Image (tube, protein in one colour):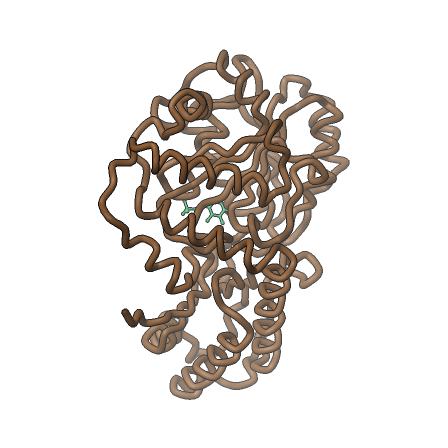
Amino acid sequence: MQIKRNVLLNPGPATTTDSVKMAQVVPDICPREAEFREIMDDIRNDLVRIVHGDLDIYTAVLFCGSGTINMDVCLNSLLPAGKKVLVINNGAYSQRAVEICEYYGLEYINLTFAYNQVPDLALIEKTMHEHPEIALVYTTHNETGTGLLNPIRDIGKLVHQFGAVFVVDTTSSYAMIPIDMEKDQIDFCMASAQKGIMAMTGLSFVIGKKELIEQSASFPKRSYYCNLFLQYDYFQKAGEMHFTPPVQTIYSVRQALKEYWQEGEAEKWKRHTRVFEAIHKGLKELGFQCLIDRKLQSGLVVAVRYPDDENWSFEKVHDYCYERGFTIYPGKIAGSNSFRLCALGAIDQEDIECFFKVLEQAMRQFKIKIPVEYR
Ligand SMILES: *Cc1c(COP(=O)(O)O)cnc(C)c1O
């Protein structure tokens, strides 16, 4: 079968290989069969291995849903009664965590920093010191809205000095930037199938310390469908998800993981880095500016400022590129006009070079000045 290949430069779902797409086409199966349980078991172990977790200490709990389900699960399940969440917030995805706290009526502190700055560790330390009731600290690794990389290892060290649990949203870095649970001081991280591992949408997973999940059995149950302990316990007892899993997505994940190990952690990160460098090169040639300092960037997302040109129209440029197989994505920073180009997925440098030819054509077509200008 010939499947049209699109190059997705949006922050997920990612471009997938044909072999991953085709892996979904399998005989019908009831997911309660032993054969299917074994597939999930292998996947769970692989997901822990990707972040170098010891399988005696860490586990992966699978959920049927998009990546936000993980954020919801961690926040609503891991907070003991009478304690507080500290959200270290310098972007749109940590802001989403704040909204989740709000919806569940959790006690929280929203410690905000500018979207273009790394959090101030001294201020985090001061906050932890003044609020011994903080039991859970939450932040985002790669802030997908800007592409800023947060210093999770340093934050995690502080969090652990105060005896709190550290939850990191690694949805847009997992299986791309090498992560090590122990060294990076992570108690819980998360991702979903359609991002770093380059499979289909519908499966998300939380990876974390078994001991802490078991402790959380006695914490208030704030959700029926999205409780971490309940889902973990069902996996322990029955080897399955509590409710229907995304069957075909799980087959695509099995194939994607096979391809992950074939490519290897270091090679894969090198490839994403090549893509990222090619994005910067292309942008520079056209005169585009980034929203945040290059030194702060994760290497996976570039947020680009709109040029000051009356002919610039993101929508028109998007449509022109989209019709030619390249998807670009709007920005996510309130009050700043930007778009994003992301380096995830089964793509390489040549795809980016082809994309910039198309982008340049689009700009000529719409009479946007090259190089672009900023006032
Ligand atoms: C993609 C992403 C999510 C999840 O978003 P969904 O739309 O629910 O898949 C969460 N956090 C970060 C940092 C992300 O990049």
